[in-house]
Amino acid sequence: MSSAIGTDVIAEQALKRLMVLKLAEELGSVAEACRRTGMDRTSFYAWKRRFQTRGLDGLKDLPPVAKSHPFTTPAETVAKILFLASQHPAWGCHRLSAHLAQAGITLSPVTIQSLLNKNGLGNLEERLLKLEVMAVREKVLLTREQIQLIEKANPAFKERHAESSRPGELLSQSSFYCRSIKDTNKVYVHTVVDTFNSYAFASLFTSEQQEMAVTLLHGTVLPFYRKHKIPIAAIFTKNAPEYCRAKASDPAMPLFELYLLLNNIRHKRTNSVRQQVNGFTARFHRTVCDEFLLPTLRTMPDLSIRELQTNLDEWLQNYNHERPHRGYPNMGKRPVDLLNEFLAVPQGP
Image 1 (tube, rainbow, N blue to C red):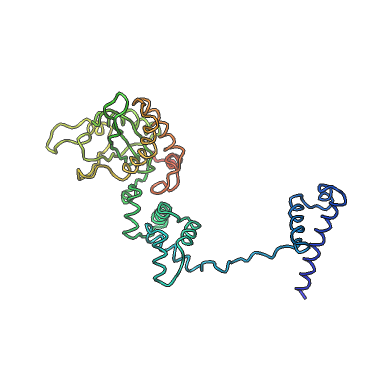
Image 2 (cartoon, rainbow, N blue to C red):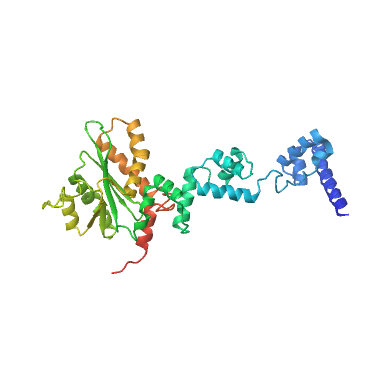
């Protein structure tokens, strides 16, 4: 009985649409026919095309689309693929397909890649970022394989055991050789990164010596923290001549260490001369090279050091204030966001 009623309704809808088509023919106006019947013109032309090709059957509603395709991958198989992709982030879709085949599950690499894309795990970067979130926010224990891959992609993740609780609690300072540019034999980039929120400072100098490291602190870094009334507790550096005494027995205190002492800042440094920078500066050095220095010097090789510094300052504004930082420690927030969140909470006297 219900089937017959449904058939009658479908036939009645088709006849109504046919009447609209004929009314338009009689009036010689599609617009007027649509106005009288309440049908929009897009639908009118769609039904007209279907009537011309299929007759009255073309005016009937199409059957509903099945909620599941007969070849849809079973949910348990999808879950297994996502688990394997998370456990072994470096595995590609071909290796995943071969591994599943050993368990009697036949899926093409194309299908596996499509499923990974739909679940936000389509490439290595997405999988590693997902694992960082799970480790930091959900406190999920990672395997050695997962940790090694994350630390390679994001060196700052190595320092998660020594997290900062506020801006200025621990800054990481370092430098690296850039290249020779116009009218300058050598250019070094001196950098400081706040381990709390990845807020970064960078200046270009023609020397790697401690005078330049102090200049960056005195002219840029300390004024920034004083402006926000945030004390700097400690600065971490590599164990190098521009930051430390040549020998522990040397009575002369380097300018860098003297400057920190006068400003009541503790000096923390690596125990080994082989460890050149910590994870935060390592990650920043990679980013500033890949995103700023290499593209800029490739397209504008004749820039002077002053012009390059101007462009670097503009890039730093974007890095600190405009672009979200994916992964540890910012987890999608901009450095300035974490700074402002800290400043918004009343601090003790």
